[in-house]
Length: 527
Ligand SMILES: *[C@@H]1O[C@H](CO)[C@@H](O)[C@H](O)[C@H]1NC(C)=O
Ligand SMILES: *[C@@H]1O[C@H](CO)[C@@H](O)[C@H](O)[C@H]1NC(C)=O
Ligand SMILES: *[C@@H]1O[C@H](CO)[C@@H](O)[C@H](O)[C@H]1NC(C)=O
Ligand SMILES: *[C@@H]1O[C@H](CO)[C@@H](O)[C@H](O)[C@H]1NC(C)=O
Image (cartoon, rainbow, N blue to C red; front, side, top):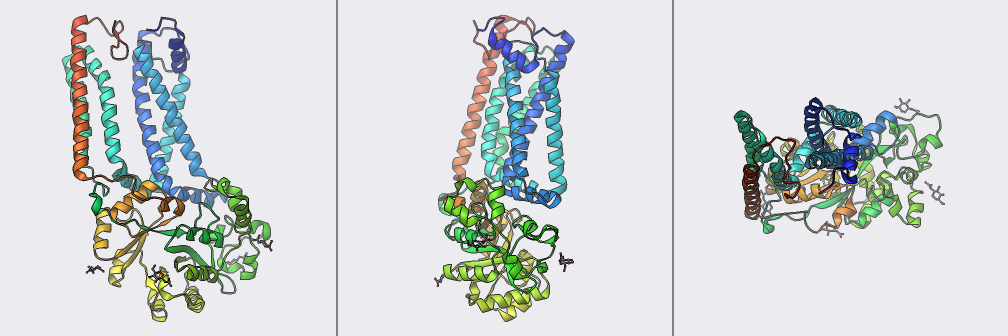
């Protein structure tokens, strides 16, 4: 046991309160409140960290939004994650210090600087949550969806935490003298326990399946090529995605002043600024439409250097010197160049038409027909002039971004955001022989979930990562899962009952003599 003035004891106290004088009785009550606040804030930071990790799949959305406001490409999402991680670690450490203090029977006097940091943390999380609710509401769907992948593990973690916390709760229960308080403590604790123990009854996950019912692995479609490893929408990027065995190239088409279809995602007011050196080559010009430049002018732009400079996926260090040189020498490709590549590799092409007026569709279709690519390699997505397109190019495969549009047209290809369909809906579409493609899937947990759900293919930024997966992150037979959670629950219940009885006996032996003199027996060995 540590002596009164031991170094560790002081150290812990200094971390928590920056002070080792004994506080007054009134302060003591207050510090107990602060412990509750600290616990609540810690739970909040854990929740926020979870949200950030699950939203990581869609980090581009945040960075893109920030770019469109600030016209400056910074990996803001990474900044957000780092702040969230620091905050979480800080709160958890503080909580650990508090528990050690409690175990050492030292006063819990939280320093006001810590109080300030906790307050700032709460403000940060409140701002973040409000921000998502206002600007990025769809992301809550992703967080909910992620529970299908994580709930079984969260539940077991919850059972573990509950078992640990039960020591403190039982101690509190033994020490409280008023019957009403005793009942309150027990009712609340029992309620929470029952909820956590029985939550698996509500857990549904497509990954709780028999192994032989697991659908085949979804095929991959390269989102603007392989943008995590190479500059997006360049020939280098599409060539790189061929190495991932993608079944299709996904891209974005716009038309130049002289009617050449070329590949570029950004359009509108920040057109060309993010992915080319347009500000350097055409200083003072504020281009905002694809037709502002001729094909010849577009050819002057460098479309790869930005990738090396901003390193948007922290992946440039993985490139060899040779690859860096190639990446730094990419230009804006034309649709024709991509079609030639697709023809060579027997790969399909799917694209958005960014400025979808009538002539754009005609000129694009003509370019495709002239290129000589087999028509069934074109997955036609732009909905506006679908009827006309089908007339001149009956061989194109029509792809819909809406189930009812597809059913009206008796189509059988669907392309939607991954959170737009539930596992049951995907299953139902699959049984109707509809080919379902989901975008944009980058994280293995999400890919695993959609694999279990039966998606036919996904559009991804991370083709090299997903290509290497030979099975989903996890799958389990439903009966095995039932056995596991019941065992875990019973084990936890047994430990709790044992703890409760042990503690009661110890209390009975010692007799009641007040909170402050007594050992917190579970944290220290009894003499
Ligand atoms: C670009 O095109 C748009 C639409 O045609 C036009 O309004 C704008 O003035 C053009 N900008 C430049 C710099 O040529
Ligand atoms: C790539 O390199 C060639 C030859 O060195 C050069 O002519 C061309 O302008 C470069 N392209 C870009 C986009 O930098
Ligand atoms: C192209 O791939 C499809 C399947 O993806 C296959 O059926 C077809 O035979 C291939 N064509 C050529 C020319 O290899
Ligand atoms: C789906 O395709 C399979 C095999 O191609 C066929 O046997 C089945 O009848 C089709 N189902 C529907 C609903 O069209």
